Length: 385
Image (cartoon, rainbow, N blue to C red):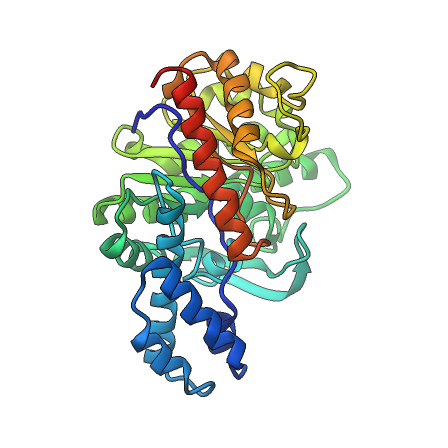
């Protein structure tokens, strides 16, 4: 998958109100129905069946809910395609979010309660209380559906082993380990590593293998927790290697790590060369909004200079997902061209938002992505491609 300045999104889009209300049992309003019709017309999606279902307003059957999810998935894919992206996904329309959804499908976990994530969203946190076992691969049906109607190559993101472990309590591997002693501390570290390795081997690899067997060839591993405990970065790397296993030469793997101190990854991520093909970080959130291609205007790119020394394709975050500011194409162009001066090869630079766009409305997300593609096209023209 080598294309100069290839564009893709990172993972999430907001879920339409009509989809959220229908699935959670809240009655739909006239405005919800208007929004469904508006987006269907804008994206060229025939919505008569959807509108007939939504017109019930409430008390949807399981089959009707499945069709509602189908249409939210279809519209999300069409949104990305209409924006002009080279690789598409449906923005997690089939999922609750990136933690609770997979954990519910793994035996051995018990949920305790809700905690708040960084963007004022909430998820239920769980503890591993018994042996871990994957109930069944949990993204295959999602890929099958998206792939059936997508007009561009499809990428499926999956939450990585380290993040699932780090965001969980451990009441199984560490249950009999004493505390307050050097030996106890060593045992706790061993237990932590075992938790990560088992998650990689027993859960993540089987999911990736099932997606590969279904025909998926572009997979993204999301690891937002990768840098939160610097001493465990080597364990994160080993967990990733185990997760990919023998698929490393058969699938294009991207990795997304968002909003963190990336410097702690080096030099450990050398161990991911040849396993992870694209390493995507956020840059726009650290950058200025001024036009220009010098270090005066382009700030927050120090880590790019380090990353460029490795063999990875550089995933460049050029869209700030935490604001409704619509980046003009000229700003996207300058961010790309500045990065290209460092990376040198257009085939080693891919373009995407900093992170998922789930906290933005579809109107804002579409305009941001449309301008991102326009800025990429301007950069291609300037370099003669």
